[in-house]
Length: 316
Image (cartoon, rainbow, N blue to C red):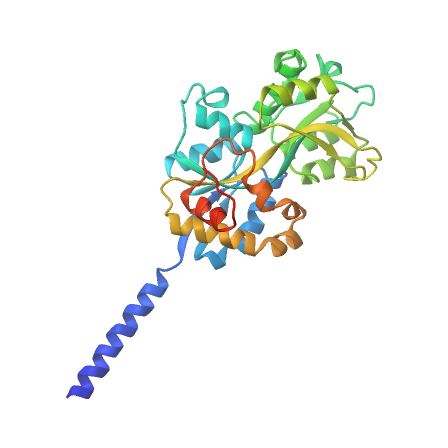
């Protein structure tokens, strides 16, 4: 009888353990971006490489930074990829968030890679921002992080989107419009090489336009989230010259309701998988502890902060 009871008890315990194991994997949804941009492809790589954290990540294509922060705020997403400038606007409740108000229901996990401003044109006579006046130009989807970066760039050149014939489209549609000759130029704010820009260079005679030193200086002086950046020569087919511009930073953020242990494990796995991420996506080469923790414009999640502290990098 005792043996029967013992066997029954063991079976119950085993079933309980199976039940615990089945629910042990936490599920999180990550907001990414336009399929023609880097957020989407990088998000897919992260999804595949974060499983060792005990978190099952699913991805959603979105309009980018602002939409991802709004999704985190509503609870639709638990993770998101955002531009560092838009992250700052959300935290402070200004610019992109002046109407909705401040969003502070997220925390930084890691800076991932640089996102330079890329101005692409079909017309070689367009050599400065001023040459865009009155021209049909794609400036980013409405509500996207890129649009607000473009507004900053134009503002530094004493211009606004009203000085252009603005087209509010995402990267994929902007590239196609450029290829089809429907617009003269397009702004893209994304890691290099960007799939949509690669497509434009492959299918049309296009050029990258550098930013002038005065505009770059104004942007650097106005905001800590901008840095000077050089797009290397041959980043795209036929692009023979390096191009000077500015960049913001792509940042992985998490909901402030995510547990400290979950985000600690996720951050730890992110860096443990860095080489694998780099092999799958060129932007992975920029993922370092220094890059991940420098220049953040919002506080870190306690779980990420715990990991960085273990690595000798105290963050707030």
